[in-house]
Length: 225
Image (cartoon, rainbow, N blue to C red):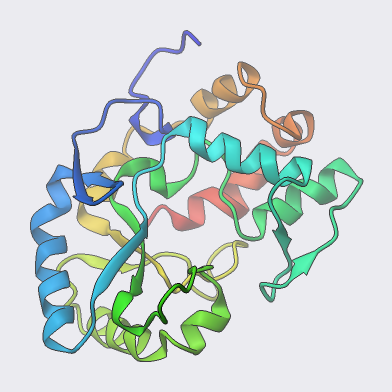
């Protein structure tokens, strides 16, 4: 792939990453703020644990392609398993319900995290990152986060995927360090993303390219806040 320009926003650049928790890497610029949020959560009885952090293009592409192939489950708008659509456009929109387009995932930035309260996890429980968890075992943790976000007391972090913004389903577990992510997104270009797709082996590529401007308005730009 020979595409000019800053490729960091697409998960193809070389961000300055730090391993914050085992196996999870974040942009070095957010470490101080993340330390503060983690320590503040501890004073309220929570143990902030990462379930996802930086994700390169190839990993997001793999998630996308495996969902398209039926190798990973597709979830409906309520977070329940659904049958795989046979129509390519319907399949694309089914994947987009919970998964970002490769090259347009905020996880490419190193500033966005999926977080849970490890203290609330039963022994041996495998986190699924679903609305049911947010409303169940992690409810108190999310109430704590919501209170801090609403009072601008979360050290630059906030939710991005919220009700009424774009067409991706709300993700209470996904938080972003907005001052840093805004800087990382300055060089994003839809034309560059198109070139990346044209050179990739992305599933549903034909319909994604045909619908890219509309997809950007519904699934990309609303989350560039």
